[in-house]
Length: 277
Ligand code: NAP
Image (cartoon, rainbow, N blue to C red; front, side, top):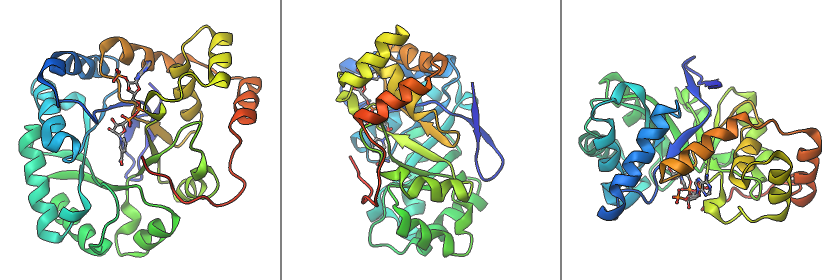
């Protein structure tokens, strides 16, 4: 699979799996676990979760799956902003490590910016890194001004990613945040790349999908992944959906496809405040 370099020089696959909503209903657990297993089988090894998801239930599900194959995953979880003080971040990380059944998180993100100063959260991240509890740290839902505040801090340039809402119907970041991150070599991780399933009957997407003989979800993912410094973490909670997402990597969008999609969903021409889901 194509890979993207983190600022540390470590390569990660461009396509992973999200887990928001997983682990919440026991009746779905076997199918969701099978979906994560399938993602690992296919090399979609970036597994994204958060302490927030199901109040830890998603982390517990991920932990069960990774028990036998931890080394195959690039594991991401997130600290809630109201936990993101120096002591709170360390305590939250310990809780995540316990639920995930691992000694180390590969990438630990601040879920969004709250009232705790970024410098304090950064200090916690650095302590966790020195203790070997996290390998990299990053942020989520930070717009341009927040990213500027972050990279101005000592050590702030080591941010591994900004995980943000990005898909064909949410293109605001193309105006400033995305070029700004690219300019600094910071990969952007696209969350909700399928707009949580709501965009899959979009007429332009359906037309392009028909041209390629694939499903709209695959075009939606191929479109996000057309950018060399963007990763995507679709949530697919069945092995079948994971397989379909994986096939997006085989789709080569043409200039005509891109023009059709642009016409239906034009790129931004002015600053838009970063959208969140
Ligand atoms: P998403 O990935 O855009 O969409 C998920 C929806 O798409 C689910 O309903 C899923 O159905 C469906 N789907 C997946 N593969 C499909 C396929 N091949 N064909 C048709 N439908 C398909 O939405 P998301 O869960 O919001 O975003 C992905 C991940 O990003 C999350 O799970 C989470 O890890 C992360 N995230 C982060 C933030 C943040 O603030 N940092 C916010 C939102 C999301 P099934 O479940 O039935 O497969």
